[in-house]
Image 1: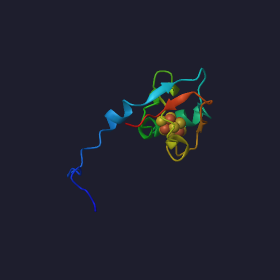
Image 2 (image 1 turned 90 degrees about the horizontal axis):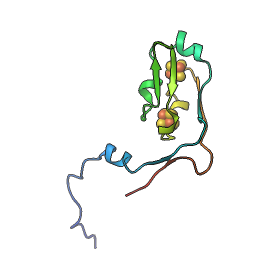
Image 3 (image 1 turned 135 degrees about the vertical axis):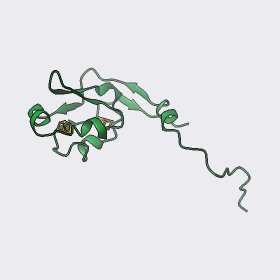
Image 4 (image 1 turned 30 degrees about the vertical axis):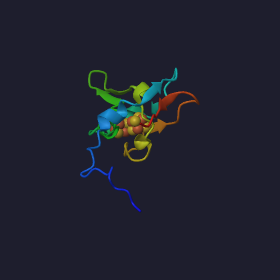
Length: 107
Ligand code: SF4
Ligand code: SF4
């Protein structure tokens, strides 16, 4: 018999901010993300797609210096930036060493 007394409808709204609050980071000393050719960012990619596609807003365009800065410490390791987040395939993304990077907690 299916006991449905605990089923709530509609289900509670999915709270992304609350879920991200469960994430812990243990940043490595060096970046696991790298712009392969900064000239492509400067001269070819006018839309700076990575600054929009990364859910953690790791990439930031600095107009005065004409370069992308990378706040690798906040990377969620979702893989977006190496699977279409940069249409010029100009980002090298590796995973951090074991024990470093993001740690997801579920609850
Ligand atoms: S999307 Fe790719 S080419 Fe464009 S700014 Fe970002 S890293 Fe550079
Ligand atoms: S792996 Fe995901 S969170 Fe990390 S930099 Fe790439 S797009 Fe951003």
